Length: 619
Image (cartoon, rainbow, N blue to C red; front, side, top):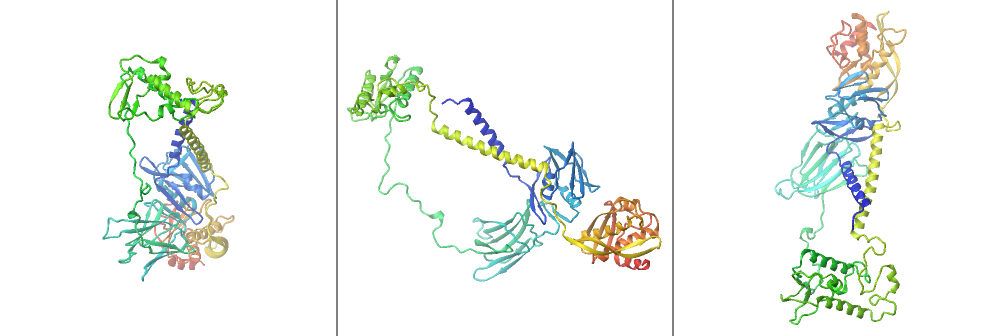
């Protein structure tokens, strides 16, 4: 069959779409996993010039960041009241009005903004205004207090068991590996892989001695955490109904033959012996190359094109058993010899002749091969068509009307495959191939459409996407210490403020409530417009770093008393609403500064106990 233009186009399309599908469906080698209180998601890590990078919207999209405003290489994002601006080929970004070092240049590639992997920590910290813990070697980010801890308890007895208790429900993937090459060491290894759980452990390895469970180790790698239990026996894994407990104990195996030693059953029926297929040898006479090829073509047409047979059925004249020779051997005719009877008018008078070969190796030239072959065909037709009626084919018994549909009697020349005006039949294996290619094209098209829509949704974003992580807390009435310049005193006042549960966020909201009193008009203690608290960082359990805006220090009135009143009111308010704070230090726009407005020291840590005694003198 000749390939039509349409078939060639379908084949080329299938190859192209199959390549695209294989490339699109390949999973990323490296990933970053982000854990929040509301969701857990993974971000593909890309290699750009030897530096790991990630797509900005892949990182921020699941957090609820809507469609960015793009202008050339400038990207502007907004999450709640926080604004961020990123510029291609720049190593700094602006988040909440302050610059953030990205640790490398941002890249704009295929309508995506790529940032270095190390920039994920400052971006999320500034944008979400919460604590963020980044385990960069294992590429895991924890937003807020979302860690899941576990304890291990070993129970001894007839069937020793290892019980793992988790602080949150878990559902890990499990696999078992057996190493037969290490008979004197741990040969059985059971691994629990935690892909969506923010699992952490302070101990990397625990030993339990000899037995089915010998050691437990914790590891982080490529955005996942895993627990590996090693021992000398295969373990059963049982998970509790609430998902907070997993038990591993020695598996009970039924006695029986090993699959590797199971005997293989014979495929031959009992008592039946293999039969040796007779071997035949066919030789072609020394005719010229063109004449030999013509005889071969004639034999091929005679084999498949006789009109009284179904396409593909063998010719009875060509495939009938060969007659026995006088010597007792089976005689085979040379290839094309029987066809010569039907195409006798086109016999070539070459130097060689068709040879008859026997299994014993005897051969000889014959001149009556064509006539014998034709007569044999006629006799076979007479025997099969002895009961045929008038007007019917002597072989099949079909009416002669079949001639009008392109069929002829068994003794006439075969019509051309296209003599009836219809195209030749496509072989079955080509039909199956084309059907599979069409199915592949359909599946590839559906997958490409789905991937395209997903990519567009990620680039454009939607307002109805996942909501930003909410901060837990409640509205409270707190005490704030307010400075009064006219009276040179400090007085406690009440303020209604939404106070989060997190200590760092709670301290930030309390300090902002104090500055809100100073930004009123009229103000008891005037301050410059824009003075505020950027963020509060908790170091340990008793130390806080307060980061203020540039206007807080640049626009502050100069004077020893005024500067002391400001710091005393802030530190006292912080101590009253966040217990346990012993030391406080102030920064200006993320940097250290010598003085507030020329007098009050900002380089040292203030002891809250000493500030408390100072504040009593002004109350």
